[in-house]
Image (cartoon, rainbow, N blue to C red):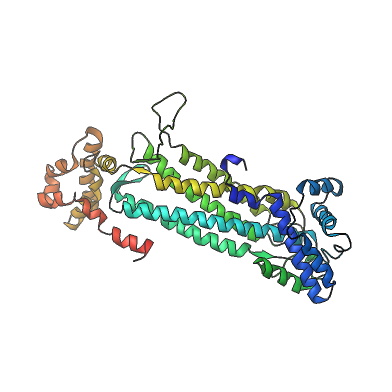
Length: 434
């Protein structure tokens, strides 16, 4: 991922130096377990820990790999250079490369998930704060992009909160599912390594032993992990699209914070564009494009092939780094979003009471008018608002058929905004608790 959309904490997880440190810890813990079983001498296991504070030479490992054409062998050769060939002769005893590679990848994904969960907590906090702040700020709800009925800005934020809260739970589950390790040797039979070694390594590294692996950890786990990231990215875009709509000049119910000295266009000095949320829409696409390759990785040949390897080298850092950046950008947008309640009210009243049509329709049916006739009566007056800018309430009060069923007071009562906000507290309790 390019540095523009990367934050150091997440990027560090995917640095070669971090990867080699994890490889080393796996090998060292495995040696301890082997020594405990009596398979290798205790002094050799202890000798491996001499490299504990060593900063592995990435360039040297690359140099060796250029000859060996094998990354794990290159690392093991470099480790032997550090601790001595004799001391290193029992390292990797009974193991296969995937034991190291797959367990490391899952450790990295767990660490990435922990950062993403923290990111999501910030987003949830921002959404909750803005929801309560604008709990009763009335705005027009839209369906098909067209005015529908009144809602509140608080309900909009609460809806996004509930969606992100579901995503938070999904990511916690995905983290749990990916937190497995495998030290089971070639084709996963433990023929050359005791299952205790796997149990010991996983315990030391905060993982659960994979119940059954082949030569690799099953990739359905990874498919679910990346699918979860894709869903979170889609929710980010869902929020971003709403904000982009609200910032349109013709709407202007809210806008991204425009800082002092910021410029919106190289050509038009007046512009204040929704650049952050547009960027979030693009970043969501990048995260989602990692989902299909992750799913295609599930089907591997027999006990192992490496068709998944090149894919994961790309999508694992790219998806997690991008989503980390996007979540933090989204949190900032929500925290600093400028909201215009007066414009919301003005927009709702743009068509002079038209959005109260359903209340009048229902009142007519309650008064004994058939639904077909009630719909016809309301629609013919509503069309006058659309076509000539008439006032909906005035037209209804002048309609003899409507007035034959409803009194003037009954008609006027149907234009009370409070009717549409009477259950906001109930919805908030469902979303945020008592």
